[in-house]
Image 1 (cartoon, rainbow, N blue to C red):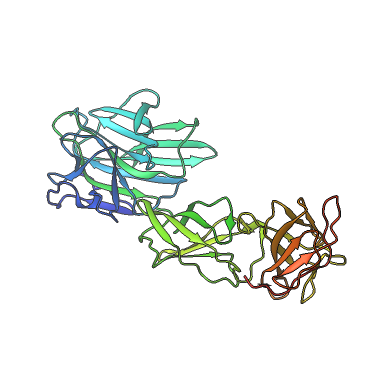
Image 2: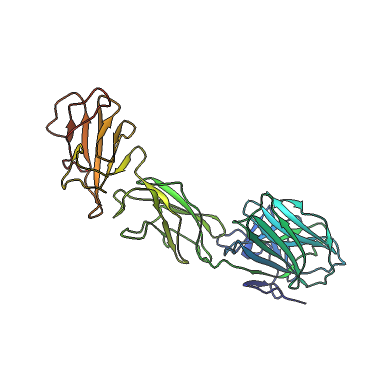
Length: 402
């Protein structure tokens, strides 16, 4: 008898019967999830499948290191007892991954695609006793997945996969194939190789736009994420934390965090290169790769490189490195010298200036292109349009608040 050991261990030797198993019954916040229609039960001090279905039990409470981890199980049956196959391995929430399973003395490696099993190479044989520990050691490097089958900690057989490999979203799992008396199962299970990264980012939005909802997908190692314990920031300096509008559980401890960056986000100019998205929660914080930070859809911006002949008058005066944001960008264009052009003979737009000296946005002001003389109120009107390109001159920024 060899009990499975590792970073995470569940030993059922003294666990009463449960149907379904309370830690995988779908009640929310469970450390385990069942896949492919299975019901997990505890029967006769062992983890098993329900008596009429097959599938996977996956550990979802903590992420594993996607470069190297090991999944273990103390089996009930010996190599002389066939039927009720059990296996160890990993799959994603959509059923893609790898397992190795034993059926009597038969040993088979499988690639799993959408929960369907496809055997990798030929069947092997292995002699083992009841309550031996079988394990699958998973390793990923340079596009290759290496799978090592271990018996009581010693590698006996290996396989590799280099074609459309599965990596990045693997969850430790235990496989059950009921076809006899349901005698197959695990007295204990264990995992080695929990991720040391803490909170991890699974996906980011393609951009961040002012006043528009965006979603970032995050996995926490131990603690469920909520709108009450999670915040989002863009860049690390001078910005207030944003409370998400929603934190939606995807599976296990993976969540979609929905947030909106408010208008005039403190101290932050627009950037096509972008900034890191910082997600903080109970288990720690994580910063994404840079994501472009852009105005609201329909607006555009420019960073000024020369203000010696700008069409825009501003108080304080415009300076190089200031930014101008404007609306109606499908019609209006402002270049890096502050020159304003329009593709239509009559067009109204609003603009505002970001002062690079104090990192603040000014109030919105309005300008109208047309043939009329400048108006007295309600904003700014530009006159003196040319027939080609419709260039304006003398736009004055005069304090229209948004």
